[in-house]
Every structure is written in structure tokens, then in C-alpha cells.
Length: 266
Image (cartoon, rainbow, N blue to C red; front, side, top):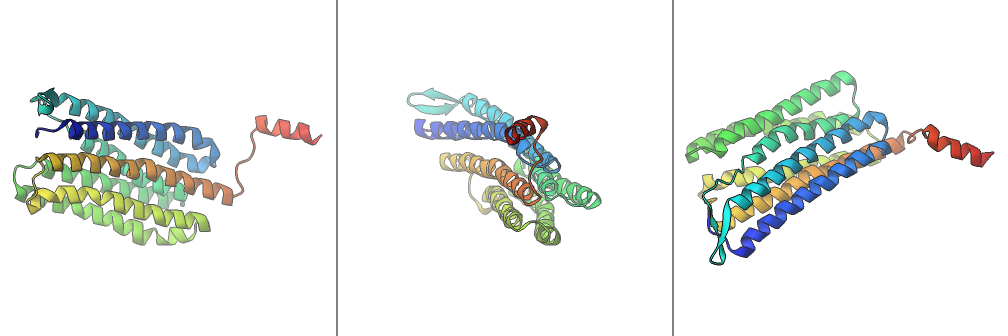
């Protein structure tokens, strides 16, 4: 790890802390918002809550690891010799990326056989993408990194194919407002996921990831991408579920809500 100024070290601490707080706040929101959508859309919000809960835990551990990897000496943060465990991110992605694809399928409310097929295919491809990418991340040579990067790109391209081609007919059957949201969420997924291969490719094109500027860019960039890809993505999933709930007539009032209404009418 490089020597960092106080400002550089604090920037990463603040960004990691913000990301943890965003995940926690999103978890609370998704749990409380379940009652605002029809029951058939609630599994999508449950998965959104799981995604940010898993990510929040891992960002807490990343923050701990970052703080343990440096010590303030003579006005600068020097490496302590304790390794900074950035592999927490891959553990997080292995669990959350398949869930991100599954919650999109869940909120579309497709026929059961179609939904099950798409979920397994997309979630399986997402897990394979992460599994194939990790050996390249820890590879000792640029050649190994390039090979594993190429292999992990294959399931990524397959996911894009399914999202932008196979889901087209299903999107057309959604209510008008939901159609716009589903198209936007595909673009959000593509934009946020696109940041990760950029960082992955940097050593291949000769950029060192060990300079202070590179370390800061990776940590800040990954964190912003994760907030968009998990919290932001989950909020769009909620908006889709809410739009479809309203298009289908909304929720039937519970007994507790119906009794005051009946009393007022009498």
C-alpha cells in the first residue's frame, strides 16, 4: 500500500462510511416499503433488502480493514504491514450480483416457467462472471489477468444479451410507466457494471494500481458504483413495483384500515 496524506486517507474513510450508511438506510426503506406494493412484487423488494444488507456488512469490514492497514506517522498515513482485504468486494459481488438480476425478473411478474428459467440463467451467469474474474484480480502476471478477464467477459455479454434482447417482449407487456422504468434500469445496470471492467483493465494497459491516486480512484469509484448499482437500482425496482401496483388497482385495504372508513361512511 502507498503512503497517503491525511486528506487522501480521510477521503476513503468518509466515502466508505457514506456507502455503509447508504446501504443501511436503503435496507430500512426496502423493509418498510414492502407494504406499499402488491404481494406478488414483494419478493423483489425482499431481494433488494438482502442486497444492501449484504453489501452494508461487507463495507463495514472493508472500512475496518482500511483503517487497520494504515497508521498516522509524522503527518502522513503509513502502511502498517497489515494487508488491506479488498477481496471482501468479490465476496459481496458473488452474493449480490446474482440477486440483482433475480429481483429484476421478480418484479416483472412473468409466467412461472419463464421466470424460473430467466432467474437461473441470469443469476448463474452473474455468479460465473464474478468467479472467473477473481483469479485475474489476484494474478501475478498481466497475461493471466487478461485471460481471466476475457473469460469473465463472456457471461457478462450473455447477461446483456438477455437483458436487452430476450426481455424485450416482456417489457412491452408492462404498464406504460413501468416500461420506461424497466428500460432505464437496464441502462443503469449496464452503466454501473461498466465501471468494474475499466478498473480491471488498468494494469493490462500499463497503469499501476499501487499509486496513491490509483488506490483512491479505485476505492471511491467502486463505492460510488456500488451505491448506484445497489441502492439506486433497488429504488428503481421499488418504483417499478409501485407503478405496477397502481396500474393494477392498488392494494386492498386491510381490516384495520377498512373499519374506520366504514364507520365514517355510516
